[in-house]
Length: 170
Image (tube, rainbow, N blue to C red; front, top):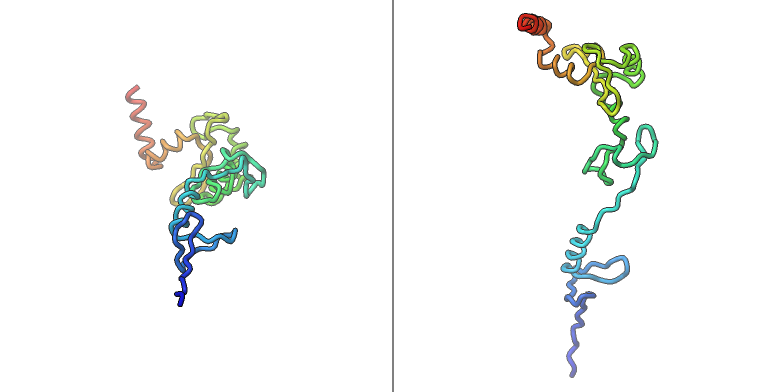
């Protein structure tokens, strides 16, 4: 009397299939070893990125180098272009809209309120100077003057002492 043979199935690469075999899109089954190899291959496959992206704020297609890098996003860059990101941060941090900034910029003639330096692109923009206690915007400053005020703790007495020191030393 012939014994019933247990039919054993093998994957494409010849590995013995277990009951937990995975069925792929093409209908072929693969074992856990093949699944692990496939995952490793997918990790090593180069990621394809688009040459440009549409900004989520201004909706203008721009090259990827006009966006900040963001590894948490699928395409590796942020949702907004660098210019729009700046306007969003100004509004969020200081409550200053693009129109208010441009009005203040025009009022100051595009120059720093302290030293009078007028930055020309690609030099950085003038930064918003504000009172830290009340968040009231005072004006636009170049980065150097803004840093200087911060180092002097925005204290008029310290600024006066620094001024006296400079005149005495001269």
